[in-house]
Length: 423
Image (cartoon, rainbow, N blue to C red):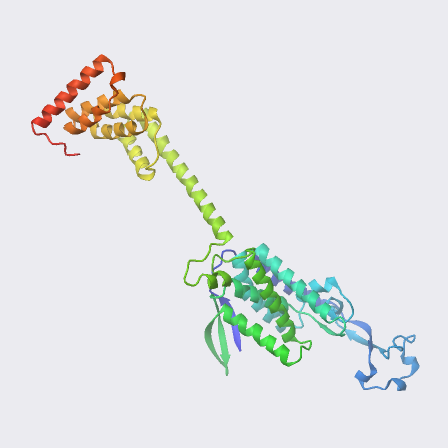
């Protein structure tokens, strides 16, 4: 005997609906046990009672009811919940399709079913969420009861009750969603308990397969194995359809994705794609917020003429957002502040970045850079390269003369052997 206790399935959702359904089953069982029994009249075949119809006294009949069919009325005490069980052979009763799988034949029946419901319920709900799990449990339970009552319309019998069929359907869904996750529990053998882990897929195949085989061997008679097998088959069909249509999924760990992904990367599910898009959007929003903070801090330091603070925030922007371009006014303000504070290396970097993106103050910035490169940075070849980009037709006469002086000074430095170490 194997007693499952829990699983190692990864849970994306808390099993709230599973707990609520278990509580409802317990509550329904308490109500069921509190209902007083009633006296009911049944029409039965005398042969089933070992009685010859001809020997029955007429006064035993109630107004001749059932005589033409060869049946006799018999009164019997029945449980108070009798009419809420799933009856066989007396028509379709939609209310019973729901009520019957919230009732149980005894305390041990309830405990066993709730244990199995917890095992498979938290696995399925942990993957698909409480709403979809509740819809699956109730929907498959109602479908199974409808089919069962429809099949046995012409076969009067004692009927059925219990959550087993719905739980078998959930077990099949768990096998679809979590085939490689392990069911953890104890195997009882000759009064000794052994801790055993069984893969969910193997567990479901064994239980459902065993009940299908048993049902075949007993000729599909109304029995617990047959009802279990019906629930399992419904779960297999529903699980396959919903996975195929991507109404449910388990982040690439479900059986279809797992089997198709052998040897290759599994196809992202709709949920994975949505999660990835949401994560990208959140990252983008976080980056935008961080960039705004750097810019806000940079402007505050700029107003306070705190050159070190300005440069620190500018470096942060360059490090974290290398493709971000400052507004032209900010570049010009930073260049002027670094010049005022004699931060020559930073001025050169800012000036070169300005020239990559803006042109309105290009000639003035080129002349300023060339002066700094010659007089402060000892980089004559870099100064000449900067001067080559001047637009001669836009230069004033004074600017042309200044450019010539800088170029002459740079060439003299190079003739004197000054090496531009940055080139």
